[in-house]
Length: 398
Image (cartoon, rainbow, N blue to C red; front, side, top):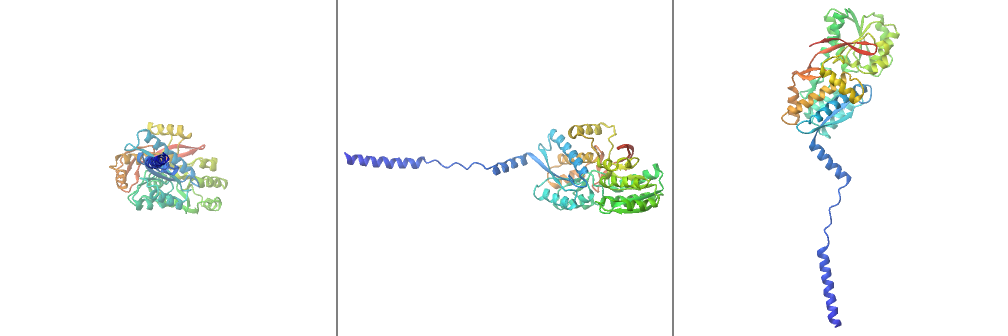
C-alpha cells in the first residue's frame, strides 16, 4: 500500500510540474515610457499638421519689429486653421529668436531646415538678418518669404527667396520725390548706419533720386548700430544748414537722434523710412519726432474693410493697434498659405512655384503681385508724425 501511494504521489508531482510548465504566462510587453509616448505623439501630430518656420528678432535692438511681426503671423495662422488649414491639415509654426543678430538668424534657419524639416520659412524683418538666412534656404531649396526686408540683395540670393514688401529703390524714390515736390526742399543731408545693409541701400537711392530731381545732398554723416551719442555728426550737419535730414535707420536709433538734433538746434525737417515704425520711436524721441515724414507700407487710417477688419482682429487678440510690421507679417503668412493651397504638393519646388505665381493677392498692406525678381509690386504711403501718431498724407504707386 505504501509502495502504491509513493508511486501515485510521484506521478502526481510530475504531472503538476508538467502543468506548471504549460501554464507559465508569456511576459507582457514593457509599458511605454514617457519618451516613447512623446515620440508617438509627435509622429501623430506631424501626420496631422504642416510645420513651417519663423525667424524673428524677439529680443535685442529690433525686438519691437520682431514681436509685432510674430503676432501678425500668429493671427494669420489662427485664421487659416479656423478655415480648415491647408490640404486638410493644420499649420504649426516653429519660432526661433535670433536676438537681432545676423549670425543667430543664420543658425536658426539652419536648425529649421536640418532638424525641424520645415516646409517653408517666414523671416526675417531686418535685411542684414535676411541676407544671413537666405543662402541657407536657397541651398536647401526651402522657400523663404521675408515680410519686410527691403534691401534688393535679399531676393537676389536665389529663386527660393521672396518678399511681400516693396524694395528700397522704390521706398527711397518715394520720400525723395515727396521731399522735392511736396515739401519743396532743395538742400538735404543724410545720417546713415554703416553697419546696416538697409540703411546703406536707402542712402544710395535717396541721394541719387533727390539729386536727379534737382535737389542737392550737401553732406552725409555716419554712425554704427549701438551708438548712443550722435552729437558730433549732428553738429557737423547743422553747420551745413540742411533743409531736410534723411535718417534711414531703425526706431531704436532714430528716436535718440531726433532728440539730440533738436537739443542742438538743428531745425531741418526729419525724413525717414519704414524702419521708424515702432512704439519705442515715440518713447525715445518724444515731441522731437513731430513734423517728420516717412515712407511706409500701410496706414491704420485706410478705411477699406480689409484693413479695418484686420485692425479689429489684431486689437482683440493682442490689445494694441497693429503697426506696419504686424501687417506685413500677416500678409507674408497669408501669401504662404495661399501658395501651399495652390501647390500640387508640399515639396519645396512646388511651393516655390506657387509663390512665384502670386498675382493680385489682397494683402492688408496693399495688393501684392510677385514679379520676376520675387519682389512685391505694390504702393507705398507717406505718413507724418503728429503728437505721437502717424497720420496719413499720401499714397505713391509704383
